[in-house]
Image (cartoon, rainbow, N blue to C red; front, side):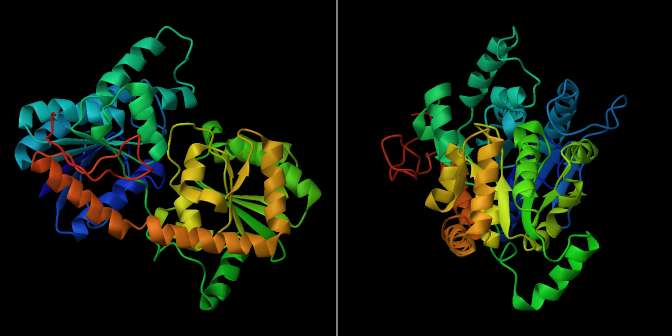
Length: 417
């Protein structure tokens, strides 16, 4: 089976949706499928992946992640590249990521007459508001909202990274429940795992390379640096934590804006207690997470998934996160939950977790067990293949129903019914 993935982003770029695209492609390839990814011209090529890139924009050779008016041009270029690739390669199925990818996929489906799957990772307008690109009270919001509703109702099947996302599509955007399938983010639990005794010297060496004193208790963060990711609140919480317990150190792994946040840490007087690594290659993330005693996930988005939670969980780290439906969906009773958007509450729970080490270690152990049992990519790849086969045969895959507990219903129905 040939699958054309449409990725309107700078794949691969070591964060968020890129990791989901990568792991989905690898899981499908391991099952014998041919996967081709069309994406923007920037990004990192990875061995074993068939990646087709757009030509560069002549007036925009450098750009950062996130919403931008230039994305309209990027997506026009991507549309052309996807069309040429599809006509030459003749895929059996289109798998579109993000709303821009789904919009391109709708046009290609009409031409190729093949099924379209939309990999939904959050509200389009919600993300634009999070990035401060769209004013919810401005004149453009109603138009963008209507466009989002229309896009959501076009695909044959929509995969959501969370059950919360499935409910959002059905209740807020009017998508038929039969077309929505929660397909959670997953994690390679053999790569992301707790440290082995033999690795302790290497971990000590790595700490030393970054100038982290050996007596410090290390709190780790992995992900993008941005207000909607909670980075500002994390640093405010770190200042409070360090003031009350100077033994604590924060390892902040991610980009962009490291210089801005280093200055913010300096203004808060905690430069000696916060280490910024900058952009960290995805393949280095497992060993860096093993340095930590505790992980934090202060993401502020109410609609997007949070794949970093699974990396933390698989590593066996206890986790402090803001209290959101997505956080509770992944971690259940085993997470530590701070009041949403409250830096003081975040600091209090970080201190609680560090000052109750036996409880925290046990929570970390149970979080890893939860990741292994419910969120492995091996099982997820097989489930995705079954979804592909079902829609190619003209039937709905087992779908999620609002009247059932989180999961998939047992019935199937004809597409278009």
